Length: 342
Figure 1 (cartoon, rainbow, N blue to C red):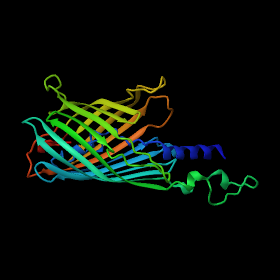
Figure 2 (figure 1 turned 30 degrees about the vertical axis):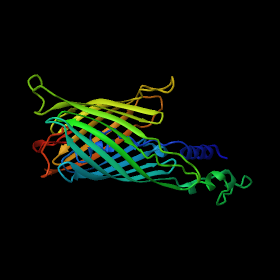
Figure 3 (figure 1 turned 30 degrees about the horizontal axis):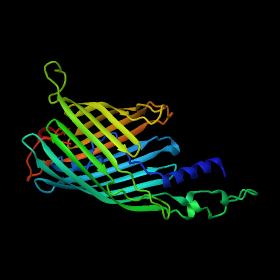
Figure 4 (figure 1 turned 180 degrees about the vertical axis):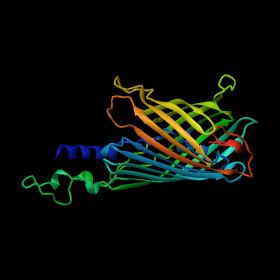
């Protein structure tokens, strides 16, 4: 068998047998619905957005991940919304789709702190295009001709797709200048095996995250606009043996923000593991009710020239807050005179 075809087939089999990792977004602070269902409705108004992540854009190594959401308050404490996720890998023609419904419930602890509980569930599908495989028994070594079909058991006993139901839970504790949360995804551990009688439960995904706003004193920094501050944030993620910690800071002004995140591997599995794997500049700009975000993951590990990772986000929030809800402030993302939103 051609070496390239052999490696391709081995890669496909590895996807069929090993436990998959969830897609991760650098701009989780701009679109926190990607990490925790308890953020559903935290804007206290109609809120929607999309984010697109293109990883390693050079040719066959490219991976594209897209996420969209919409949510709003239903009552003074209950919020509901929906999310959709699509992940595609060019080299393997692997696709992952998931559509979820999310709800959250808010409890006022005191005049400063609120506790939110979130739950999310929905339908997912993972698929490969096994019809594009070219295996050894399809090649006539005498004349180089290719015949249709294969008797290889790895293909005969594999399906092109997996359908499954998935569920996640999360909590968020927040006040005007800080928030802390945690979420656990895939709590029902759906079977994602491509083989006929396989049993590969999807590993649960744990994320612990937080943010804190430091208001800048206007007197020594008079060149900055009013209501400027520095936002410090972290997001720890773990799935099976894989772990990642994003940590960084963002300078936030009423219409423009910029900052940098560092992606770290705090539990290196070998002597060759890198503690810091990428440095990610982030910028965002607000125009009326829209916020545009861009980030670039600059690889600094020894993995080679990957051309980095590009993320583009667009979020929207209605000017009208929920008329059934308290007009509290949540400093996740500023929104001018109408208070704060995420």
